[in-house]
Length: 371
Image (cartoon, rainbow, N blue to C red; front, side, top):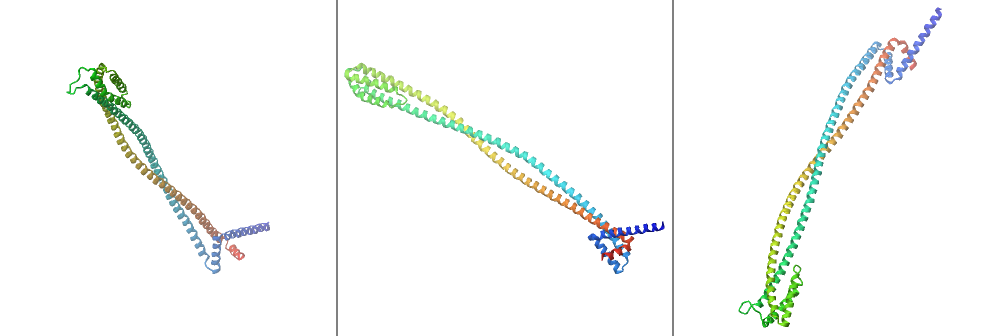
């Protein structure tokens, strides 16, 4: 029984030695752990106090613990600052976005106002074109009426000249009008006026306003021709009366033509004055609207440039936010890596202290086998 207990104790001791050996080997497989093992080996070889080594390791462990606390505090402070920076950048972007929304609303109003102004300008231009065209047509018509009037008056004036030439033949040499016309005087009169009447017939063929005068002159020509052939004094007397009657009619006609022409001219003047006022007003309105459109175009250009600046600032803020977020994430990752590495080193130091303090003999055996 005692033998079995002894065997068991020996087996447990051997097992514990194996476990301790494995633990030293695991520490030695780590780069930092190997440094610790090497340092401990140097202390043993140099004959220095092992208590000093343990104190040094404990100081190192305390240093790692303090670094872990400092790193955690620094990381928390940095991440807090990161969070605040990211919030500020987000708020700045929201503020810029809100400004852009407000500016877009103003821009839409300006563009709509410009479109309305352009529609008004186009409508006024169309109206001005219509009024100008109406004035041109009215002026053309007035010119045609004036030409027609001049032509009419010239034709009537020609008729008066011819009649007055004919009337001269009904006056005696002493200037007294013939009351009775005998056969001899009728032949003389017919001879004198026949050529004038024939010329008047030819000239009146060109009349455009008073073609009826041509037929009257043809009647006169027929009368003078019959008188020349037969010496009909009554026909000459009737011709004299017709000339007087025609003269009165022509003068009345010319008077009527003058009144009609004056009336047309007055109507034209009033219409032209009204159209000129419309053209003047439309021209002034267009000039005012053009100035307004230019002002709107300037505002739109300024606002568009301002919005482009805000958009560029928004892009920059977004980029700054992304860069800051990346920086914060990298810092957090670096902190995590550093903390894990320092924690691992602290644990190795603590493990070395514990193992060495409890297993100095086993450590020396491990050192011998290590070599």
